Image (cartoon, rainbow, N blue to C red):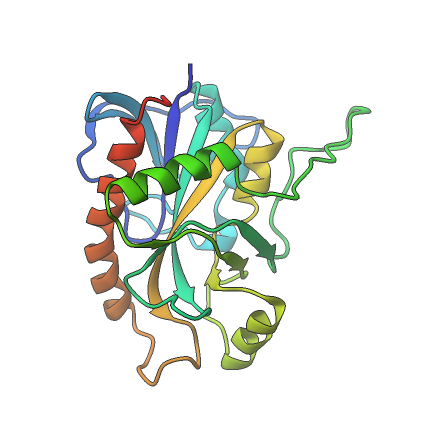
Length: 248
C-alpha cells in the first residue's frame, strides 16, 4: 500500500482542503522534526503533511532538520513524498505564477547534514542519484496536471542554494550557465535523503519571483507572498487530484 506525504514550503503552512484528524511527533535518531506531522484526509485519501520551516516559527533553510523530517515521515508509513518548493525563475518561461515539476537538481549547498550514512557499519550509501526525482511519482504529477488543465512546465533543473539570503545577479548568471532553470534553498539534501530511505520523492515548484537581475522590480517578501497565495490553491487542487488518482 502506498502512503502519500506532503512537505510544505514557504507560505504553505497548511494544505488547503486537508481535514486534520491527528498529529504525530515520532521519535527519530536525529532530533525533532520541524513540527508535528499532521495526519488528515484530502478528499477520500489519508495522507501526512509536514511544514519543513515549522509553524508559527520559521526555520531558515540551512537549519532545517531534513534528516528528522524524512525519518519521521517514514516512521509513519509514508512511501511517497511530494515536496512543495517556492523558487525563483531563471530559465525562459519560468515566470512568477508558473508551476514547474523539475526533473533534475544541482546542489550548491554546504554544511548541511546530507546523509544518513554515519560510517558506523560496512554498508556505504552509494545511492544512484542519476534521476533525483522518482519517475513514477513525477509521472503521476504530470498526468494529473494535464488532466486537470493546470498550466505547468514538465521539466526543469532546480538549483539549490544555501540561503537564507537571496542570490546576487552574478550568481544567477553562473547558475544559468550551469543549466539551472530554477533557484531555491530547500530542495537538497531533502531529495537525496529520501532516496537513501527508499522513499519515492518528487517536487512541485512554485515560481514566486524572477531570480536576481532578471527583472527590474525589487525582490520583496510581500511580492512573493502575493504570488504564493495565488498558487497555493492551484497546488492544493493538483495534490488532491494526485491523491485521488488511484496510486495511493
